[in-house]
Image (cartoon, rainbow, N blue to C red; front, side):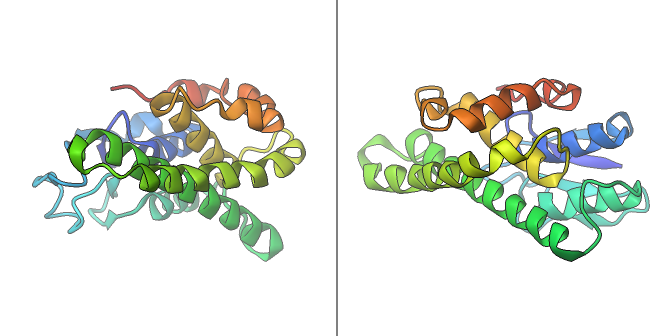
Length: 202
């Protein structure tokens, strides 16, 4: 198995956290990449027309993207329990995944605006609008987090990666002050070996 990898990507991280939780991280070869929203990585495009990470190659050569598909594939291939098989619990976990991914995607767009866009073209209202999605997501999470307990599934993994990305790229945003329940849950969840092994870096 292979994955086009970036150590700073929260979506790659989510896939690798899943792999660690399933005990197969060491079996996945990390292919270097330089994917970006403006300059795409030409080495990825033959496998994924979007030229994005994560892009995953199975042992039999099948190519999978994006992170949601990769995570579910890994779970299914290992007969894991990170995705409930059916029923209301499955839809609840997939909804959590969608919210966490939406928060992460909004944070990524805010970062691109303030790092990649030429300074004279930056639009503060855009950044504010994207980070507002993170804050309203936190409002939802603040109500839900006390019920998470010791759950380890695709929902909690996705939220862990979302909050970890905020710490990594937006250290000036004091999300813990507005979401103490979420902060308490994250403090414990972030100590899991899978989370520590995948801490983002430049």
